[in-house]
Image (cartoon, rainbow, N blue to C red):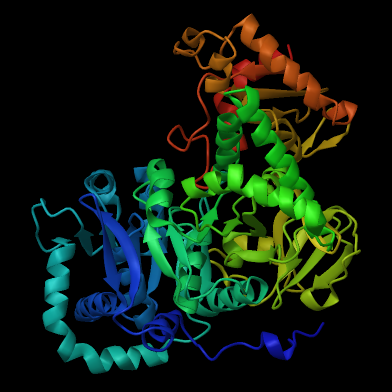
Length: 629
């Protein structure tokens, strides 16, 4: 199949990621334009391109003096910050590989990645992370120098501070400048830009080798499918840059020249949105679900006229959205009602999100259709996409002017997607951007991907690489899906699929999204593999429960699960209600009530807030078995 693109989809002339940055600094903008903003001592502080380029010079001078060669690895355990950007740009300029490690990993998991990658330098972001590394330092023989952001440390030949290396690098740069420029010219499309390690929830972590062109091509595809993002946009960054989704968003801002503000932390995102007034955000579904739940609660809890106006406005927004989706004009009567709904309700909700937010890009998991529709009813676009770490990340995305809720959008211009029967290996269809038909429907099967965004393979792990690439070069995503209305629809992860003892296939994510429509349910975990019927672990919406008369004391014990008839009956009402939407073999017959939410801190969730099925099943095995006794 031809990979030839129409004229409008030809690649720009860039060969490495640092060229994106230089182009924004010198051509899209000027060096004195503000690119990054973060809060320091309670105030928002701006960083211009000139500031950042100066830091990059210092870092490249220091790295060259340490003898690092093209292809060497440098590890970062670092929060989102201007420093992360500067270090990464210095590494990309010299052809050094960025090994980004999730700050939430355990000390042993961190040691594994440092040893597997052979990282020579380690940048550590805060005292807690430095203390964690110290626990396993003796196991990490390849690490030559640790660069500490905390300054109150006793430095030696192996431990230095970030401030020290900037000062040294500033003095060293003039002597190394010609060699730095020569190294920069050697960096090209096929060079590895980063190793991003998979979460390892089903085994040993694997380092996906992502090249400069993997990211370059993904940025081109993003821009071609979402052309409404421009140099005038402001992006609020809060997902970890150690994750491929946020990393690609960062490279996209350097490509398009959009500015970036860093949220202080995930707990202050709501406050920071109001302060920064962003136009764009990358978000995971769980965050958007929380916003939806909070807005619905706030809009209806007062009751009376206020709640009636809120619900009326939502119904008007829904009619306006459906009219737009059908390609029709609102007409004068609907336009008048929508203007009133905007003034009375929608504008107030948007103001709490800064008043300028025009687009969420949702990734890292399946977005419940009702959540995407809800935001569209308010006049805020949520564009859901699909991809993996191994695909840099995105493969498909909903287009700005065409939304098909419940799908992850259209195949990107430079890519191909196939649907394969997991059992017979028959390929049902191969779809590209150019074969798109709005009425196309396919059989369901495993989603395969091919394109310039797909990784080189797993670092020093040919066995695992061979498992995910077939002889025709297709990358096997492990996701199950099909095409609907020309757009890709994800059913679930292949490894998540549950098969009951009666031979029925159940996709838990679809069921979970069905029950999450209930305002009573904060989280739900579906169970049923090799069992006769389906059960669940439910985390109730505590505030909602207390507001409806459930005593607060019910939630105050230390046991993992709650035994309370009143709470069970209250939740059971909605379990019964939403069971009606499901086939009989999919319906939840019994459930456990979990006292506290699943969390990253407890090891139950990934960094993108997806529940780790294997971990939860093992952790609560005894309680789950009692459901089937």
